[in-house]
Image 1 (cartoon, rainbow, N blue to C red):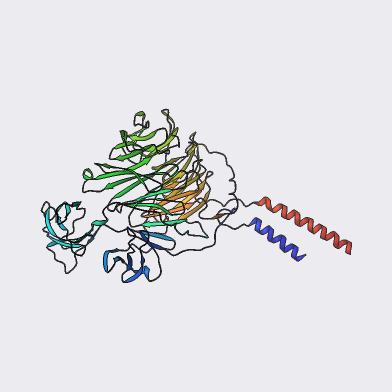
Image 2: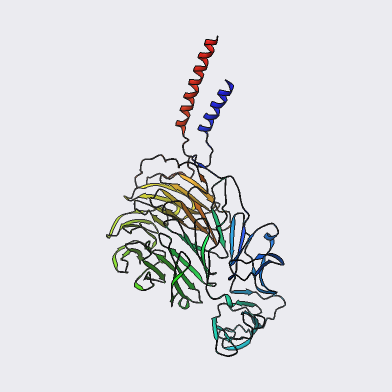
Length: 614
């Protein structure tokens, strides 16, 4: 009898008190955390050696070397590339990655050293690296020296007088037969007494081939599938609607990449010294890369736009006489949009010009298969796929974000204090005022739901304008993304005072499924993206890209529990918000009753037998 009672009680307890992991139908993998990694990139299969200070770390193979972090390598601050008996490159290492995080290290074309205590404070020094010896080097049209041992050191008088020859515009290489010459622009001028090192044989853009997947980070609490950090202050990215690929671009160090959901690099395009913008079409077969070369003034900046396929083949490249602020591509890949300043240009799949139209804010442009939504001066505008304006609707202030449904039949926009819902047929279906400044908006692929991000609140609406719920937060809701059916909501939150950075996933009823806190200090979560099925979510914080699945990196052993439906709330100012601390999902209590009933039957039969025995 004692055994029967123990068995019954254990079954009842397990049914009433399931494991509390935020979702009783989801089992989290046991921890198996990996160390952080440096990924040292170096073009070509030259079998070059990598050193951290004087410690040999390995050889470059297939354009890169993956180095796990241990206690000794965590304290190194500089690395070198050695080919033969010669050091061909040396640079500082980014901060050591934490467990499970990859830090991508690409060679810099230009490095600078500040004046030291014993430097010559009357000259500016250029150390120019070039692979061929005997080549003459000219700076600003004046002969400066000859490459010897792949290096020329050139000192130019530095008198800090603007317009003086110590401010050259070009570095040129002339071969002894005078039949070959190659010139590069001078992007960084050393300080008086300082040094600028130019590794110019890496200045040509380079396409890296595929690389292995990133090792997953397994958690007992929600966390990313993988995280990648770049030596830059910002990463922009997109996830294909299909969820089978994503793309990223970095500021200043010129990396563009297409990756698979497991973090494997399908290819990486590298053009140092540039800022890259990226966009991907719905099925992940095409990636648009926008390159911007920053100059001293915006008017002097230049750029180019490229179209690459999933295999890393560059289908075409188009140089532009202006910098690029943003790129976008329609879900079917037939229309490519490039914005610069207050102008948007439309290109077709071959790179040919389709049309152009004015924009007031590069973020406020959204491209669909059937049209383009943008913003003018205090207006929402809708264009055809060739750039013809179909309608314009005046609003009370500038538009901060626009989102279109998959086919462009409906869309949503937010301004400082309003949310707008519109259709392709020039109809502003409804608009709602906001209690706080609106920053971002996302509409579901079917146009049935939308979510808006504002200071202190995350809002969720249906297509009729009913605010179904809102979530309060003591800081800023920076960005928001919806799944195609609108049933999954992801949002990024940044702190105000002591509140932490985090990304949070909600269901359609406003219940918090899980949240992940970003541990880096003074880092703000900026953008969040989601695949159409809601299974993959990405978020960037500074130079780090975090990639999640819907379940917070859990192994699914059962379907997710069906959420309890609640009555829709009216869209008025009396709507009560959802508490920022949601109760956990109800346990499957009905499962208790069959166990209790079975126990009662067993006890009754046992009592009857005992009575007979007596």
